[in-house]
Image (cartoon, rainbow, N blue to C red; front, side, top):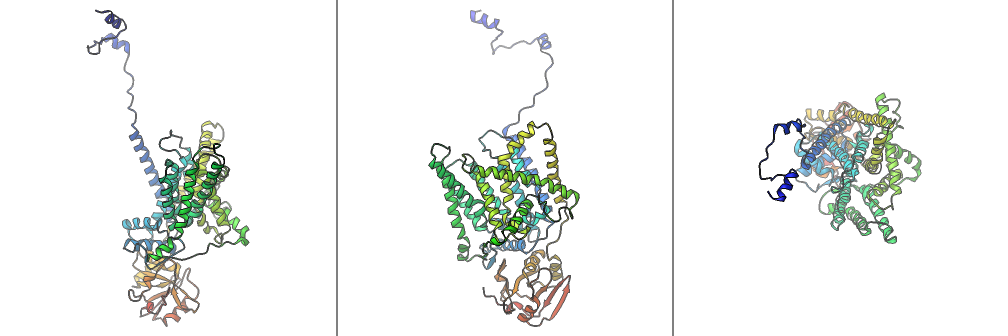
Length: 568
């Protein structure tokens, strides 16, 4: 044996190609084998588990929000959007002959409604399903955006996302018509958060501002509130920070050109999107009813008070509601009081965001802070600040505030949880339990029928399939009947004659050459004053008159559309 071989033997090394005998004594000395170590999960398996948990959470949230949405009656506003989507689904893609409201929702909720109608048909359930889908998406997007970690960064604790989702988890019952019913600005926050996910996650390059501008333009066509919640704040903060960076070159990190390009893309989108209604009308599509964005500084004190209550209502914490201590159950009082902690966190985060406007770092934090201030300020001085229902004009404050709170406070609260030894963790557990109880409480509410459901049933049972009524009785009756009865909106003009109501209405439905209508609903909930004398002045003496459940229905033996002035 060579010297190398002797050395290898002394070291206990053997030739790997030679079999090695294992003696029983060696096995005994080694002891019994230890427990089997399970194989580590692969990244794909871990991702699949996370995706499954997210899907399960989304399904639970959707069910809860769908149930809570059904506790609010569908009105003609949401019904109008259902009918518009139904018309688009049947070939009228540009909504020819339609007069829409001051907000078209053409590129946001209407495609969503079309998708649901393909699966379920025409009926009130379309609005409730869409509302639940929208709010579920908002909760998930807010959590994802608040997390703020690009895929290549090290994983961070989930505190940010959990805080953002938690603040939005359980809408107050009073806010159901604002957050969980008809399209009314809250849905516009979905494309807004998607745009910011793009800005937040994509590497700075030339195509990001281009795509951001395109998405802002498409959203602007649907709802001009994106000016306040997305476009103007990005222009102000992006341009301001870029200018500060150019002035103080070398004193702050980052690329001023990129933030300036994002601001420029947003500005171009704001201008281009403002021409959306004109372009649609020029193409033969819908016409948008103009509504002045007036202000009323004379009622600033009242507007400030309504804005404060609306802010709290959005976060489920309106302790100033007159029913807070009188009509609410004990559970309701506790739930609203617990939500006050969430509203306070949102206000705290807003202050932090405003303080970071010119600080190097995340662009999203100061932009969201400015967006909240712009939305609240514009609402406070507007003519919409009359009652809590007007808070729909600032509904985006909720997801914006939730993301902001998660972004700037989530890590801090998570650190407190890890190190706290006193009252903090029990209090946080109680607050979490209250939010979850509120989610279940909202889902447990009894479903109510759509507005004018009894009228729709009565008309269908009596063979009255097409007629006229006031706006709040028209489209809602059509949708409540599943399209078996079609009721078009009219109102008395200055002469006392009935004319088409050019708001969320299809002018083709008034055409006597295409349709035969023989009744007018002249009385009932939310009917225009003077409907009965105006109907008789326009169409003459009716052949029959019926009273049902507070409604008055006049019937003629002729096509009343032939005597209707349809000039628009």
